Amino acid sequence: MCHHEEGNFCRLSKENCEGPCGKLWLPSGPLNGCIALWEQGCSTDGDCCQHGECRQGSCESDDPWLKNGSTPTNKPTPVPTDPTKAPTLVPTVQPTTPKPTNSPTAPLPTTSPTTPVPTKTPTNNPTNEPTTPAPQGGGFPDVYSDKVRINQVGYLRFATKVGIIVDDSTSPMEWQVQDAAGSVLLSGITTVYGDDSASLDHVHQADFSLLTDLGAYKLVVDGIGSSLEFHIAPSLYPNLPHEAMNYFYFHRMGTEIEGEHLVDDRYARAALHPHDTDVPAYPGWCPTCDDFDLLGSWADAGDFGIYTVNHAISAWTLLNLHEMFPVAFGDGELNLPESGNSFPDVLDEVDYGSRFVRGMLPSDGGLASHKAHNHAWSAFTITVEGENAAAGARSAMGSSTPATYAVARVNAQLARMWSSKGGDAAHIATLWSAAKDAWNRADGTAKSYSAMEASPGPAMGGGDYPDGNTNDDRYAAACEMYLSAYALGDDDVVLYKSATTSNDHFTQMSQWDWATVTGAGTLSLYAVDNDLSNPDKMWIEENIVSFANQIKMAIDSEGYPSNLKYGSE
Image (tube, rainbow, N blue to C red; front, side):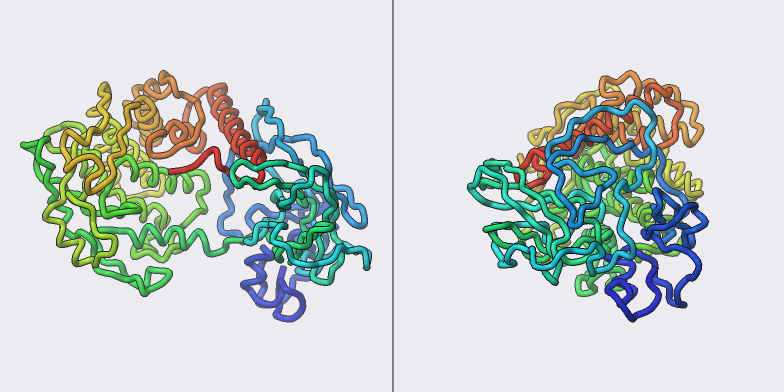
């Protein structure tokens, strides 16, 4: 705990305390007679201050700020691996579970997963000063070299920590982690990776994961030099979640964007496309259709179009985050116009951005419009007024099966979430009706979008995003329809469950993006309560863990540890 502004780094301010130090700020003074979070010496939970839990002699907490007493369930158990070339602490301290430096093997779990806890016991009183005694005078020369490379953002306290050394040597080199005083806290030898195909560098890797003391350090390599300074902390991105979510509010179309709800109020602006209530169908399809009511959307990343399938994966990602972690972005956390209505801000944001989705269903009962945008690309630099003036040549383009399944997915998930939060019954009925309507329209069809059918031309005024494989779209939609019907007590739950379990993609897990949505459906089955059999649930869980292991191995296989194999769109 941090209780006053005197003393070490963690106690300098509330920002330091609850940011990089990951502790609790106690404005009224210290708590006496108990052991603080992440400090050792406990025997039972009662020895720990407030809500700490005694784990392996250390007071720990999965929810240190007590935003919500509930935590996600069904977390996979970490897969153990055999470490090699473990670095040496100075003086030697044996860790409970050393980190691996080479690509791990990936056995699948055979039992139900449990909530993981850190396996390394942190040192007493973690601060920005080293708590492990270190010998003096044994450090390599601390001379900066751009050949010694680290993550300049920093490293999470219990995460893997790997530095990269660019050198042609084929023999391991000695390295040290030094603090600001030049004391050696950890030492070891590099693993020679060799030629990295992405960068064309010949690299070594130094794994210093065993160092978990909070503070500022440098990686120093014998005969090469030192890295830039880096930090180890339990939290590296304290403002990133709010700033990332503010992107969606800023991209709202159809409403004025107010400075009081922005991270930077200089970007307040008038409403984009406030007349999207009456968007005509592009000539060549749906000649008898009413105009489309598409008011309420997010502008696309690169233009002011709205894309049904692209939007669906964005909406699902945010809603699935909240279904997995109910404390995420609760009411008031995002400073939205809707904040204070007792409903989670993330649900309010997705609900606004998704309003146009049900409007993509044409009045003639056909498949949903694949996208809507201007007939020509907007200028790279354009005013709000200039963009709105182009609305006279803005249309709903031709239809597709994936777009129609996307309408079903988005509205089914929204209906389920509003219901779980006690939302307005009429709104829930509107969402669920749109979802069922879209499912009925799409089921049994397999129509890919074609820019030659009803649009200004291929990639003219907006991207095309064709998708010839519709079975994964049907699977993802069936998953959301089944889960929502189960939650809402709908009589068609058996129909949707059958569509889910009979699909070739059932229980499968893979990379997801706008065009490939199998993984999204399976993750929803994992996150949301349902009546699938226990063997099916185990298969889902095992496939998720297996895919996570594939990503981990892909990261470990790179010279510069990064996820280059599984990109996102």
